[in-house]
Length: 238
Image (cartoon, rainbow, N blue to C red; front, side, top):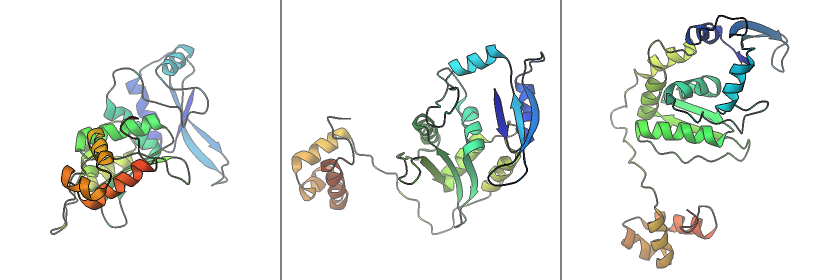
């Protein structure tokens, strides 16, 4: 089993977490090859030749072969932030947006990984995100900004954790951001419940439902359109 990284700081730190000293144990190294982006590209490589270890990792949920859509978190007790830090190191980003706001994002083709990341961030920050594949690439782009991004980055990239060094540097930089005076805080989104969906469908019109549910007529109108056109599950499907 091989894993490839752009930075050797990750591979050099793995042996201290998995101190197997026999010949089948994990070994850091390098691989140089030609890619679509460079004639010569060198990657840090981590290899494990132990059949027992490979079989166990596969049993924990890491598929053999192509796995971008099928990979899922291990079905055992684990430290979620340590697992997700590895995912973000590989397929995420930490930094500032072009508007100068902190952000943490993850791009993945796996529904299970996107959901796990979304749930962890929600439990940590309270920020709700609806995950949906984009139309262009059929992948998920899960994004957090401002205070939610600061809290998430600090949770994932705590001091002395095993990670890409540049992610640690970016996390420290994010901590310095403060919300500008006068920038309003968006209110928490009020999620639609199955009971509200039922009441909306029974009311039949957005105007009647708005008074009944204590929502704006525009919110009720959009939700009713989505329910009638199959954009969201009906109460019987939830």
